[in-house]
Picture: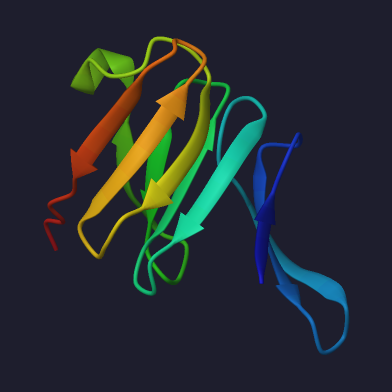
Length: 104
């Protein structure tokens, strides 16, 4: 299981021993949301970024206002719609629909 929260970490838990087994610093400020599509993990944060992670929690892509002209405020939720598309919502009162291209 993975979780995130105010500490801006993504934590991996082993539920058989009920302990955290791994964590990574994911964002600069509080992380707000995670969404997993079976292949990729999305995280969103008060730092106005969405990050795309591999199954092994390697950072693949950062989506931010400077590079992508997207949300201008805290990104509260991300949700996969299918294997390549997701939606995000923000305190800037907008929804943005995304299509992700992964360059391996």
